[in-house]
Each structure stands twice: as C-alpha cells, then as structure tokens.
Amino acid sequence: MDAGYRYLPPYYDRWQKSYGKDFSTLIFPKLLATIRSHRIGGATMLDVACGTGTLAQLMARRGWEVTGIDASEGMIREATAKTAGSRLRIEFHRQDMRHLAIPRPVHLATSFFDSLNHLMSAAELRETLRRIRASLLAGGWLVFDTSTERCFTTLWTQSETITTHGFSIALENSYDPGRKSALCNVTLIVPGEGGAVRLEETVKERYYTQDEVAGLLGGTGFAVRESEDFNFTSNPAIGKLKTWWVAEAV
Image 1 (cartoon, rainbow, N blue to C red):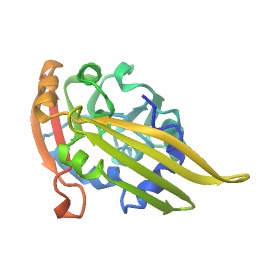
Image 2: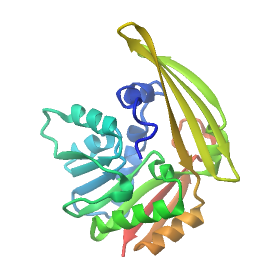
Image 3: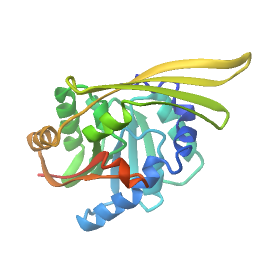
Image 4: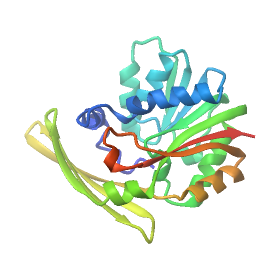
C-alpha cells in the first residue's frame, strides 16, 4: 500500500504548505465540531493512514492518546521525527490498513485526505472497515472523508508543476470514469550531491459512490450518522470535493 509514497514523505509537508494550510489543519475544526455535535466521548484515537502525523499531533495537544498507522515507511519516519522529544501521547506504527490490528481498542477512529480512496476495490475497503470496526470500543465512532466524483473530474484531470522550498513537484493526473479509477504520476526534482535528482512514482485512487460506502459501512457493523458533501477550500466555485462521513459502531 505504500506505492506512491516512497519518495514523497520528506517533501510532503512542504508541498502541502505551498497551497496555504495543509489538509489536516483545514479540517481540524470540522472534526472538533463533529466530536461535539455527536457527543463522541473518550480520549483514545486511531488515525488510519496518518501520513506525517499532523492530525495526530493536533489531537494529542488537546489531550487525546493517539495511535497512527500508515503503510508508508517514509510517512511513519516523518511523523515520528516530528514528535521526537515531545511529551505527546502518540504512537506511530507502519501498518497496511487492509491488515490493521492494534493491541487496545479506541473510542474514535479517523481517516482523512481521501485515504480510503487509495483502496482499489470494494473488497479491500470492506476489509479495512471491518478491521477498523474491530479496533473500536463498544459505541465507538469512525469519522473520515472520501472524494466525490466532482473531485476526480475536476482535480484528477489536470496537471500542474509547483516549485517551492528548494524542490519541484510535477503532477500528471488522469481519471477513467468507466473504471472509477484515478492515476497521478508524480515527478520530484530535488537537490542531490551531484546536482538535481529526478524521482518518479505513482499514486492511484478509486471513486466510491455514497451508496457504495454506506452499504459497506452497514455491512461491517456501522450505522451512518452523517454523510455530507463539503468544500474544504476557500474557493466556493470549485464545489464540494469531499464527503464527510460519521459512523457509529453498533
């Protein structure tokens, strides 16, 4: 599952900051509002596909005990480095979400920035949801997002090149609506000992309809309490690119 995140992790945060705020910082107030509105109790949390650990840090600073898992060795390395020397109650582990297993169940599980869209089949998504359900305490909650098809037809059909903080990143995107599959070819130009170094990798995602996601949640022990399309950007014209999901373990 770490395909596409072999070379990106050391540059990931700097790339995200080139857009302004990173996604975790943008959606953090929405997550806190969800916790309040649904009266989600407890203080233990699992962040699935935690990336460089930004959300885990934000939650830990508010008193949560957080376990973060990610399939990418580089992402876990970056996340661990960011919290080194702190007293935050965070553990990071390299795990493929399809084989998720944690020693102690938690009150809340999260998975953001279309992480579950990286699962390329309904069977993989079902198994991941089943394992997340097994990681929750009775009455626990799962909060996550998925990309809408508008996201894929808008963003995953464009290409862009960004030069920032001493490196360049080029994204060549494509989306096949028939297969519901998206592909991003990533090219990094980074400093090296003998000059600039070119690094290439691929990120794949799949679009799932709301009916598909709701059906899989219902079949793995969850009751959907909220599903809302939303725009996380400051540009209203771009439309609602994500669906916000809140599900309770039943």
